[in-house]
Image 1 (tube, helix red, strand yellow):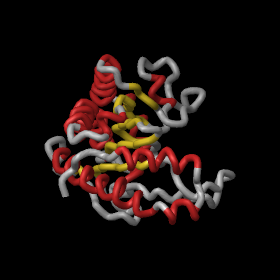
Image 2 (tube, rainbow, N blue to C red; image 1 turned 90 degrees about the horizontal axis):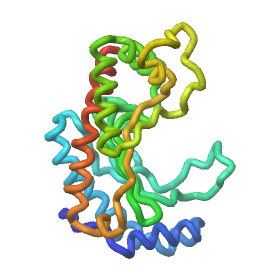
Image 3 (spheres, rainbow, N blue to C red; image 1 turned 180 degrees about the vertical axis):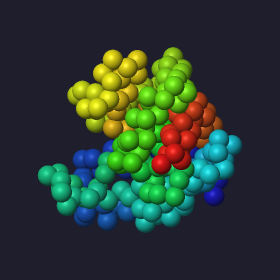
Image 4 (cartoon, helix red, strand yellow; image 1 turned 180 degrees about the horizontal axis):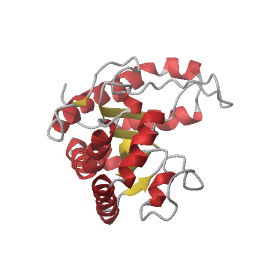
Length: 231
């Protein structure tokens, strides 16, 4: 499959789904989802995934549509949510590096919502082993200095840095006066940018723009890969 851009019809589907978030409406318009969103998303995943091998041959991408691949399921898990809307109002894709679940490994992601697109690089949250490894890396002279340089560079380039659901204080047992103490409050770490317009999303040039951003954000993702390898 060749990626030629997402269609206006696909983006309108997401807009309409927000206003008609029912199983009945979705089933009536399922062909639009499959033809105008799912099919081009799989072509996009293949095109971007191949290009990401230039960053690391270990970056993974997967064309399955059952939720186990790069394309996230559009169905919402409502078991523990007060919001019982059956569908997400966005379409999301992940590319990851590691043998675990895609959402638990250092990687790259894109989300399309409200006619715009956003990109991330990193990890939304750390499990306990990764959290401890991350904190030790922050305190380490070499690893910590490298992280600080990466973050400062990304901020200068216009990327926002997020630390997940932050701790209010430096965790007990860690130095509050450390020059990188603010990083010790992080529960995750990722860079993000939301500059993809409707015009870009509907163009074949989307692949080049996304890969360009991912390459710029790759030092953060690759730093997290190195930290995870210490576990």
